[in-house]
Length: 336
Ligand code: NAD
Ligand code: ZN
Ligand code: ZN
Image (cartoon, rainbow, N blue to C red):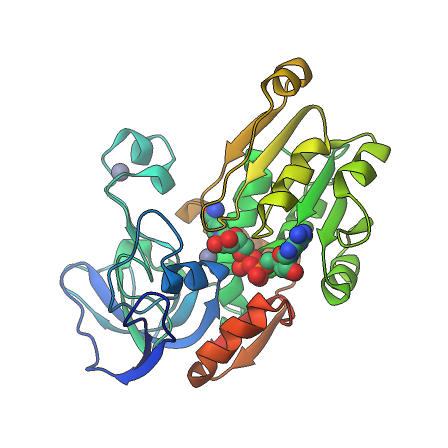
């Protein structure tokens, strides 16, 4: 099978032929149909973060495909079934986080496309308990962006406790942001979308954003404050200044939800303003298996749209440049 492999951090990916993987106990092997390219894969390939992946590895945590073989003891999935393999590739199921509904905080978790090989390949392995069944009727190319971009922003909207009278700011209308806008609308909020390209802003408008803010031309904080300030602001742009503008655009009691992970990212929290205004800064990491099931259910019910462009796996390095240049319509999905 072919796979896109990071051989050296910071170097272009290499397309390699590898033996088809065989599932061990409690695993399944999957013939990948579609695999979304998340900005996290770019951070992974460059070694942007303090905890680095160990090359060689196959990135990709939006892999969707058909179960080909079952490992020993796998009884709840069947051969031929469509599943999605998210970032949370495995969690222990026994620690306080796992037992309290926060498996995404498990200290023993394994991360797909980072700690274990991921979806940018013709075949992949997954722990059967963490391979999420994809409901009938969802196209695999749509299921792919939902598997990380969808579940992550759905969770961020949940964590912010968004309600129908809230103003929600979404900064960065890329893979994650185009879905964040939709989940905030489903929660009933008024949505302000912020980006630095015309295409992304018009896409946000098509997806229901009420206020469009071009951060090249206006200070997003000022625009948000003109509207009374944001009850919740979701940081998705890979840019510390964009996050800082969101912080200044909060209303009293507002919540800033950090999701994007720029290399060396840091935010100055002004103590006086934070205390007097009662604002919060919250980190949010992907979502649980239950969150992903809810994301798929919403999509199957026709309530969300996944926007993507398909590419062959061989184009992986060009696609990374396109994403960094802001030239992609929301998500790139590799079609195998
Ligand atoms: P993306 O590249 O598809 O989208 C980023 C968007 O930000 C683009 O539309 C770009 O035009 C816009 N942008 C750039 N500069 C901006 C600025 N100054 N102001 C406003 N918008 C600006 O990336 P993505 O796949 O959506 O991922 C976004 C980030 O989220 C990445 O850092 C990724 O690693 C991270 N991420 C975090 C989690 C999590 O669980 N916390 C999960 C997935 C991804
Ligand atoms: Zn991701
Ligand atoms: Zn655990």
